[in-house]
Image (cartoon, rainbow, N blue to C red; front, side, top):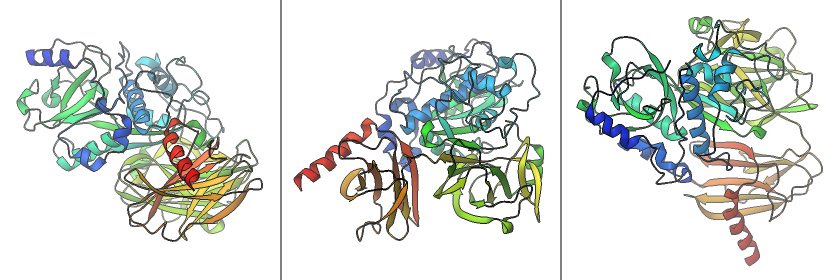
Amino acid sequence: MLKIKNILTCAISISLFLMSSTAADATQTAEDLRNSDISKLVKQSKFDSRDYGIVTPVRDQGDTSLCWAYSTASASETSILRSGIDKSVDKSSLSLSPQQIGYARHNRGSDPLNNTTGEITSSSGNWSYAGGGTKYAAALLSTWCGPVKSDKAYNVNGWSNAAYKLESAISVDGKNLNKDAAAREKMKRAIVKYGAVTFSYNNVREAYYYNPSKESGSSPHACTIIGWDDTIPAENFYPSKTTTDGGWLVKNSYSSLPYFYLSYEVTCEQIYAFDYVMNDKYDNNYFYDASATDSGIGSLLKIKQAANVFKVKGDTENEWIKAVSVGIVGGNTDCTVEVYSDVQDGSFNPQNAKLETTKTVYLEYGGFNCIELDKPVEVKKGSTFAVVVKVNNAYITLSENEGESYVYRGGWTPSQAVRIKVFTKNDEKNQNSIEFMDEGQVKVRGNGGIKQLIITMSENEELKDFYVESINFDENKEKIVTLPSGWIRIENIRYKAFLWDNFENISPECSEIEWYKKERWQYDISSHKYSDSYKYDRRTWKTRFDAE
């Protein structure tokens, strides 16, 4: 939306605006938020991400139509600070470029693996006025074309200059937010979990307590929701009071009104939250859906099963398939991922290929969901593999591109590009990994520099015990470690596993695995470099060993 300026018509709005034009000082830390119970925070009458120091300064979009890009950059910054993946940045130093997001939406070439030819767009003229939407931004960033730091020019190569890699861009259904408390609670859960969400609404004027539900005229505008307040009286909203107390706390891209509250009764669209990882977690992103625009055929057919077939093109002889991203409409669905090797060129039939692994997860939200495999799949350069995705209460989206994609409608038939992406890691000599096995064992893969496998046991962030296994690898070999009796049978216990080269230095390319005992074993694998967050644990372990 082009920036519009209006005079605030309510005295109370003016005074409240002046009081809130500066973001609140953090009363707690991002670490406090990460350690909090999300379900309890969602039940609070008020929530403000600024209280945790994870909201970056407001930036003015000027006279451009880039509100959607500013909203995306803002929500992405808050999500990165909320997750703590990058210890080198804070709310004052982290700044992602809205201009690059806007430019790349309409101007980009083939992806690094040359599986696509770039964006399909019908826009013309100046890209900063061409329009867009947060759903288009989510599709763009899912290809890893950005985001870039804002000290970079807008027209830089988004592939090579991306500061982080997007794993997931979940979509919140906004259809019933204006009348359903349960839907609002689901929205609140996304805000707490990711720190912020993008959205768009009909913006006709500026007001600190705004209710545009009965406004005439259409002026769509995208902003960022960073919290809520259930206690705002309905009569405070302008230009007309509402029947429901409360509203969303909105971070704007106008310096004239940096923050405001939007009534719960307003219809919200294109609601997305973002989840990023550091660049070194994955090396390659296999996809065909370069277009940010969904194909209308996908919404018409409502595909429940789809597949993409890819040829391995990485820089090393072998790669490891680590995760699969799937674009869906709808949520509250089971999703099954199957990875096949030995796929015949030019056609796809699972019966003629080798099933390597499968995983089923529950997806609460739509959008682009990343599913990490329990067991990475090794594929050789030049070989062909396929990924099949199946859902029940949702449907898989297609883009306007072409690719070696297939949908199942009584049989496997070629289709437009299916929004299924595959994240891989190159087979490097220093690649280390940890895999939890149901039999009470841990499979460790690493190089000769690794000396110890250390597994901690904690409850409510308090260290209860730890286990150490000395490791001696030949290059790129695996070792099976059997854990002590009782270690994997304890309810509500959190485990972390690390590969160290010695007690003083964490391995430069370490792997961390966390798993929780609920109805079944669930765990998350991530790779990262040494950071200050490990100092406390390292001292604790060192003290224990010195005592023994």
